[in-house]
Image (tube, rainbow, N blue to C red; front, side, top):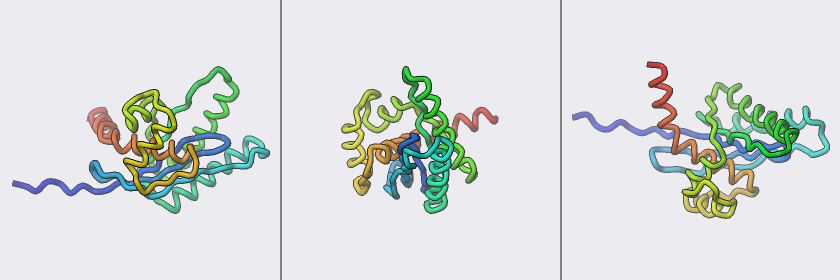
Length: 175
């Protein structure tokens, strides 16, 4: 009888895109065990033109990718609201958030905001306080300084929980 396979850990980058603050969070996932690695946010100055803010977001995420070397990344899908212009601008920040890991050769998964909340809290309409409480339970050493960094950690946790089903779907599609 062969021994069970050794589970290797995977480093995951979660990104919560935004033009004012793009949150990032890094965890290690080994089986069901999650370990906090780091978190923060990229904060381009508000007075910069849109193109310069997008560049600042890219440079900040590229620095995180270079420093922490994640193997996988996950980004929150855009929440569409009534303000079409704001939604389009957020979509541009999201595009940069997906481009940065892709330029490092890292696959990027996408998760809806309700899926992130349901995975971390158990309810798809959880509030920020409920997410913060669950982060303390799931990642006791994490101390995010902003809601954006906390959301990015929640996105990374969501990917850790769903990455197996994504890999299985990709294998089945390729077979």
